[in-house]
Image (cartoon, rainbow, N blue to C red):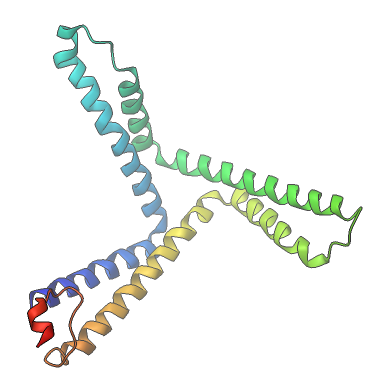
Length: 188
């Protein structure tokens, strides 16, 4: 019975997170950047405070890397939009350059061999994707979170259906994955 309760709680959590990611993907991006900022901030704080408490007595060098980590973490936490947009501009530029590079290489290859038109489709799509990212950086950043959210919703619903479906058959030979059964009982 306990494994059934944990399974239902897991489904509810996955469903809730999935819905939140689909409804508010922009907020999910910002919270992810803020979380990364916290992950930089905490070790930096520990390093700097450790130096201030014990390092001066031992004549240790000031933890410059720790201070950098602390400041970078604060910056990520205070200005998450800046980092999301910057990252997306870099990604967009890389996609544009990659698309152009592939088109140029395929065009050069036409000098010595036949290059079917279909080979140009992917580089053109990469180029277009790069341009879309450059002109809509924040919207492009939300797409992976929406996909993740939809996946979470589908997982939760499928798992909930399986729990309900196999709950009535628990008395039969169906064994839940979470349930540990001694080998002696299986051999019977």
